[in-house]
Image (tube, rainbow, N blue to C red; front, top):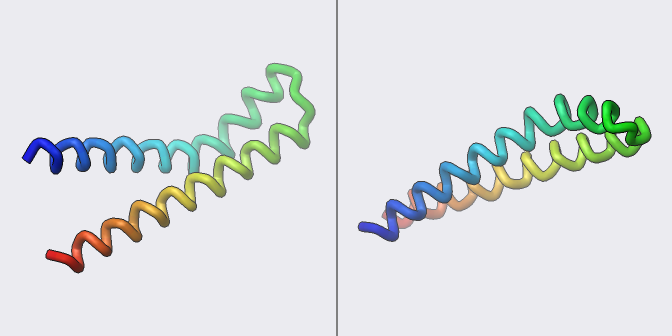
Length: 72
């Protein structure tokens, strides 16, 4: 039972991270980096990288959920 609770907690934490990367990364990261005097293109590329990482993480989490649901 404790292992299932830890897995649920970790999945929830990863889901929050994926949501932040997907929505917050491209929105706020370029703004913050430009305020710190980073070049515009670098901040945009990092925002795009955060978006891609968030989508990949969401896909990974959904894929794992389908496998777990199919086995029960």
